Image 1: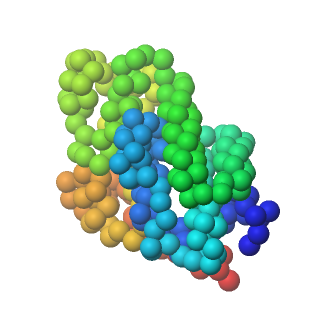
Image 2: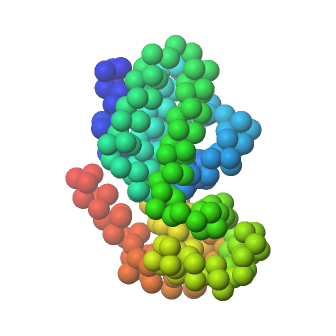
Length: 249
């Protein structure tokens, strides 16, 4: 692989093992970017910057080039998640191309680390605007931000209402008026979207996913998943594996 090959569209159909390896380590970051958790990401990356990892595959014997290749893979994965989250394709492609081109010019690992932070914060800001662009009241914007920041917990409407200082029944009515979806259904929908990504890109079991996302039991998670997706987590996982197997052939 040469530097002229470092383009987003060449990495959009990545090797599944590489995808899973990267996703398993950075699952929280990818999900946080997708929903625009800017402040959380800023704190996370300052505590744990993007650095070469021992568990990465060897794409080049040159250490800096290997680091850069993994940056490109990460850029492609982040773009993919943002597209799933509603970012327009052109915006996602243009952004990834821009940062990949900058990575092409980087000569040190620190430059790549700094560039990763810049890229992630850029995507997170874009996703934050995408998430709330059609919602005009401050209360609903804060509600969505609260949900995004607590996806890995058992979210209760009265807790959200207390957070934004509104009556929970009024909040539910207002949310339905402005978004067209019930607040409880929206929370469930966001959790199941996250669960689908976990199934797609991680090796977590269904019970582990249920626990990670704050479901009271595995059975409730399965029922909720089927309600939103139309099939059980197992059938969804099997369909993904079948598609990957056909793709490999």
